[in-house]
Image (cartoon, rainbow, N blue to C red; front, side):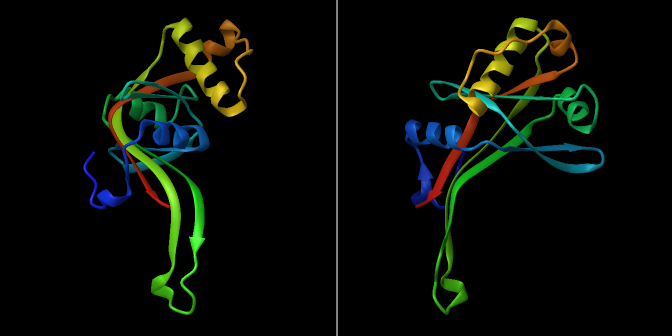
Length: 159
């Protein structure tokens, strides 16, 4: 993705990975006939070269899943390492340290039980550091699992 402040652009894949590891909430930007909709979600992830796949889960019904089923492009954003930079008595000299990752892709529902389980394990590994979870067929049936494959994303930092 093209960025105005190229001096803040992160191009190092290891730094991108560190943002993914540190962030635990991803905001999905979706749109439907009612307008824009931003929803915070926990996530799992896999990077294969420059291809980033994000995994999410949720309810089988509701606005989010309805929009995802429509096949429209979605945006995502996550950020971490927040710290206020003091500017003393001058308000306009204050700033903020951060790292962020934004991008786009088309979310897809995962229906294959094995792929669903692997996606849920990715989420659990990211959130807990563990992979020794079991998923009953009943729990897989009542959980919507989806992925967003992004080839267009960028990292940014103010360090």
